[in-house]
Image (tube, rainbow, N blue to C red; front, top):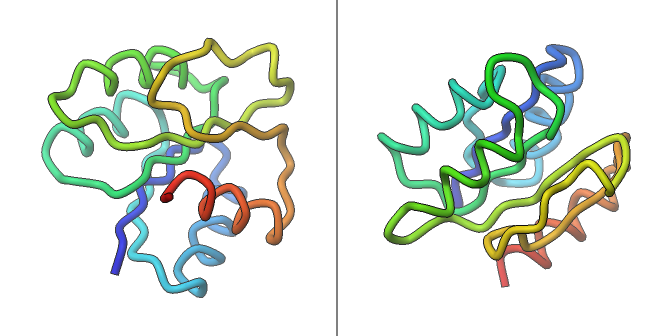
Length: 114
């Protein structure tokens, strides 16, 4: 079973997306901000990280830049209100504007895990 780290500061969106991913057969770990997400990613291996961009404490762009420094960085899906908010990085495999539908999320994951 593949493990996904979902980093999202909005609790209701984090819970709904986490449930959807779990129901789709993934092991899902939730983080409320980039700082928490980076701590988890530093200590545990993930097959994929899905992160929001605009978050308190540490935004998604900074999180992604830190993940890119890992010896074997996990692929990332970046979600934002506007694609222009996302700073390009080689570990980003897919991007999308929020909100995403269930079908879009599944397609993004399939693209990122290739």
